[in-house]
Image (cartoon, rainbow, N blue to C red; front, side, top):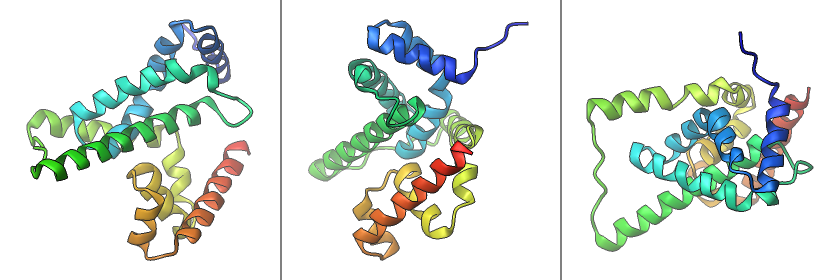
Length: 187
């Protein structure tokens, strides 16, 4: 029976490989984090092919900016997740810009394959790492914001407009909600 090394050991190895510019870093990230990260990407972009493109772009960014990761500022998974999230949002915004400029909508396929892929990817991976369950335990004022910003890809301005609250309140609540999640993760 093969045992897998503890998560901290894997993270340390990935960080070491990223700093050394060793290609093994990308292989380990893909092997250990792809399901969870791809699930978040897919939830934001909603189209299988686009999610695959964002995953590839994210892998490139991990490689290019890996030497900038600072373990003092947070866990590796959080750093990877933020890159994936920002890349997903950038992809959505560029798609929206192209659609508005050309006046046509991207076609969304409703084939059996895409329906199956979507159902397999959407929730399980975020829940599998426990983040979604933790977010669900937060007060609605924090939970709703985290859902909008991190799982649905809204900007803070868009969240403020949708929830009809001031932008400053959004910033304060998101900071408080994230701090609560950090406290729970450390305990």
